Length: 259
Ligand SMILES: C/C(=C\Cc1cc(O)c2ccccc2c1O)CCC[C@H](C)CCC[C@H](C)CCCC(C)C
Ligand SMILES: C[S@@+](CC[C@H](N)C(=O)[O-])C[C@H]1O[C@@H](n2cnc3c(N)ncnc32)[C@H](O)[C@@H]1O
Image 1 (tube, rainbow, N blue to C red):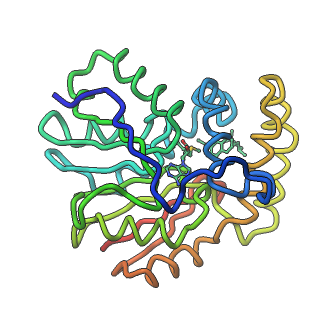
Image 2 (cartoon, rainbow, N blue to C red):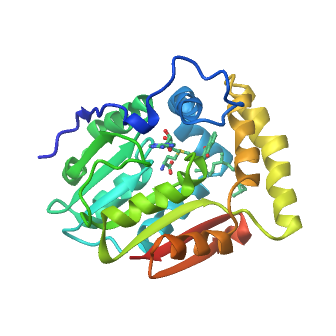
């Protein structure tokens, strides 16, 4: 029976937080982002449901399906947050499989662990929560049969390093499925997304005192990689195949890469 206790890991030397981050521009460095996701943790799930009208659950189901996770597998959910994809993976791999949800926000992992304990399904006990850094994964080479990363790659400070780490811990012939906002080539799609963030998402978030945190969404999407650039990065780090699928009219996208 997997423990639902959090497994704390010491900060890796590459990310030991400085006493303060005076040189960091807002939301630019790892510990700023860690603090952001810890602040939004209490309302994160509810705002996702409200602001996407529940659609994000469909997008996450698609990403988990595309990971190829199956009964009995040992799988990893990188940047698991409150655990949405981990719970979907838990159903896929069943009680003989094993799900590891990794995140560097204690607050997000605490929400995930609480949600696990509230659920009646036995096989959710096949999930363990690990506090760790996606840029320094505390797992052996070739350890996982499938990996997911939901709305995480856009948020790590070193996307190439994150992809290298995912490749390292993935078994040969296995897949990673990386879901995120799509940095569209279509001006209309970009305009609609940015209009929604400015005029719906941020005003709603401001009701919770989180307008700055949700404003970050727009800048992070602008600084993200396009689908083609994500495919190129995956092949450069060593994945054998990489395809980026646009979802919901190009609002979201999912990169599926095989080792
Ligand atoms: C699950 C979703 C986003 C997760 C997420 C990712 C981030 O990087 C954040 C950064 C800072 C704050 C919050 C997040 C965050 O929640 C996607 C759905 C939730 C979005 C917040 C809503 C986006 C709305 C779309 C722009 C328009 C939706 C149109 C239609 C209703 C589908
Ligand atoms: C937008 S949330 C996504 C949560 C969840 N996967 C989902 O789909 O709802 C992004 C998560 O990535 C985590 N994160 C960002 N950078 C990280 C890093 N370098 N290592 C581990 N977790 C990280 C944040 O703490 C946050 O919980």
